[in-house]
Image (cartoon, rainbow over all chains, first blue to last red; front, side, top):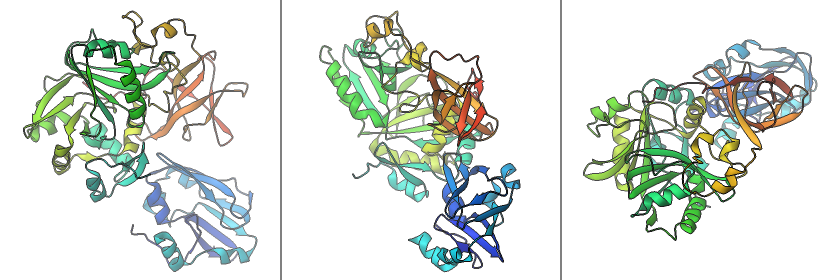
Length: 127
Length: 357
């Protein structure tokens, strides 16, 4: 499967991308993830201000026939959600890297070390 | 265990299908997009390889008597050339499978069963057949089955100069020939749209499939098939129908002909008190899925979702549920999705009416 994996992002084993700017992690799902899921028809995002543990489920993304949990790649507080996605979940298919889901205030920068860079994520997907 | 393959397995790979294990067959779940595949069947035509399904042939002077005794629905009074949908029940009236019996002639009936139940059905039918003058054969491995479904069905068959179905009514069956090979064609399907199911000897499968693909018919996978059948309100064995319930517990009373001669399960069913009932519903937001609890006004669980999906045709989540028979459908019912509840909007009729003949 050909997959678009931008260089500037970090990646989790749950096929999420993370854009780090200072103390803020912007999170979405990768091109690989959206393509495996197929037509995305529903997104459920957390309340703002919710405190998330690392690897805690914070929402779901549903295709016609499947439900997938979204996991927070880092611990921290939800500072913003992209509520536009609830009305147009299919934009995750058409533009996965433009369709961020949540912004999290990073509690512990060290947790970013567990994430993959683009090259490692590419091998992970091919693995 | 090595998965079984249909005759045209390689063709699915060539079309980049996503393959999954379904009833121990490696089957195409989707090719491009479920949404597009569903839309093709609703608006044009789609082709499904459903060769995993089982085919049993009943031949002989007692064919009608045997099948009529075996099934709850009426085969004997059906005219030659008719297809009959029926549950297959055990002595206690519990459902072993649901199937279609195709009355090709009085002494030749084709029975098409669910892939996951082939062995169970075969064993059951074998043990029930001893007193009848019939030859019962399991043709499942020799036959491929394609379902051509959608409003363009007749046009496509005509364009390919395959089979004239102008006079083949809904739920009718006939023998025909393709490339000098005998095939069985029926105006049946699992989508609610006009369409045919064509039973063909394996050696013809690859040729016929490629004709449909070259004619621009959309290949459709099992996921689209499941969405299509849900939208038009057809039950599925293993979901809505199980061997823990009778046809009376799941909306199939119309398929049990208590007035006909004795049949397997009749005596149990005549005194049976229903324990469950089924209903269809949609919700405003979110998607109900199989296994989600159904609750009443007080928050008590009264049932469970048996199948659910996003309906691309309706643009909302739809589902079938099974609840305790004592619960009234006049009361408000709710589905619980990840600890949140949504009110069920109950449908008395199918969510969508297809354009079948």
